[in-house]
Length: 123
Image (cartoon, rainbow, N blue to C red):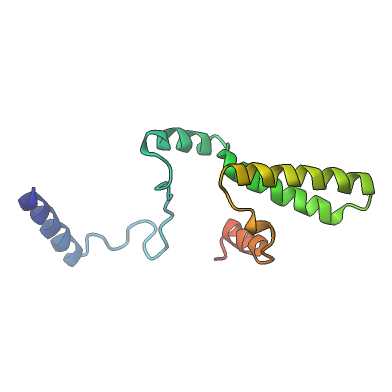
């Protein structure tokens, strides 16, 4: 196997020296890599299919719901709505905790801005 790896590596280096990799689409731009290393190998394809279909894993959906509720809670003026939002947020925090996930992102004032920058591609 080492011989084959060395042969392939040499061919790649020769092609690189000849400029065969210059002017490729996306050259000079950061790679968009999907880090699914934390997803068990037997579930990766299912997760990719769900992601391409617009579905989020439960943990991400819970985080998204928690952030939405936090915003609603901050903007609510009606006491009943505030109470409802607060109860729903506490339920989500409990579910996150039960799944051994942190709810620290709810208390980090910079978290939302970082997420926005990543979504719109400025960071």
